[in-house]
Image (cartoon, rainbow, N blue to C red; front, side):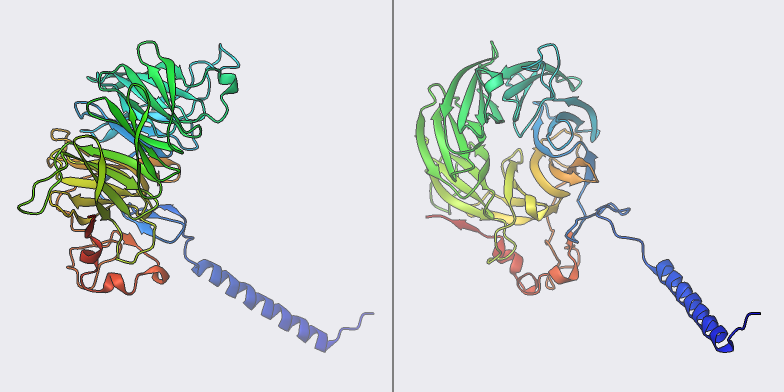
Length: 460
């Protein structure tokens, strides 16, 4: 015979009831939780960053591949070539500008491996992308493979096919730290100059034989090569020593060295006299724009007749007068009539539009892009755009694994960035949504904040 305790029965019943209530309550909590918020694209076309920022790129997004870092426009403006060099195999995308779509993607890979001559290599690519003067050949910097890759381009159709490999070292089995970045072709199409980033030098190739013929010492970590329109000299930005070097284009002799801001990256030449105040004549027949990525500014140099450079202005893309570094101006482009400069603000996720027609350039506003823009191009008339020109900006990430190019109509720029000022009209929309703790609370909400930060500084 078993004896049961009434008190024990009551206790167990109470425990069971409590457990049931707790289970039901937990189920209700789980069912009422909102869907998890994930970093990446959203249904409305915006993009959520892991910082909590919400980007809303302007224009249309054209998918390419990971890390689109450079673009080159065909001579007739019909096709844009984009060099992709992210974690996926490097490639070149061909974009039909009028149709606004990628029509072809070609892998950048070695014709043969140095250790297995019958086997194609994996290839590499970093930053360098340039058309030959003929418009029928394209060259890409081969990064860690110590090569420059040549491609054959058909202007009528946009077809792109691999051509020759040009080796930048005497022995590929002992290439050391050789890392080929930017490439530039002489105006007569006879020579190609390639920046060997880690060897602080310029590799020079004969394009008829595709052979390395010379190597010149230059500044620390050469980033961008710009050949003078005359073909007699070239400018090289030294990423590692905040300097600009002018070389003789035939001998490689360093003719001059100019100090710049930290991390000079892109260079843009304008063969047009620098504007002056009324009544003054310009002593500079040309200007050079230098993007200094570790500042908030693009530096402007007046180019004298003898090639000497004198800084005449810096164009600030800071949002407020006392903003810390962080806009990262990394690339520049110009419209066809040379009235507007476009500046890629990589960490600002925007393109700055600047009026450069007066002695003191004026920032007109910012065009929202995708995540971390890396390059910008202005399209000429007749490229299938609604206005005389449009901008294309590459972004480091768009979606989960693909890069993109933003095709935007620059039009009148009226964007107030990153938040709408209380004194701004309702039409000046925010291009970036910030989480509450990050919203600016003082300078950007004060009247005239944008006008103060948009002024350039004239260097006397």
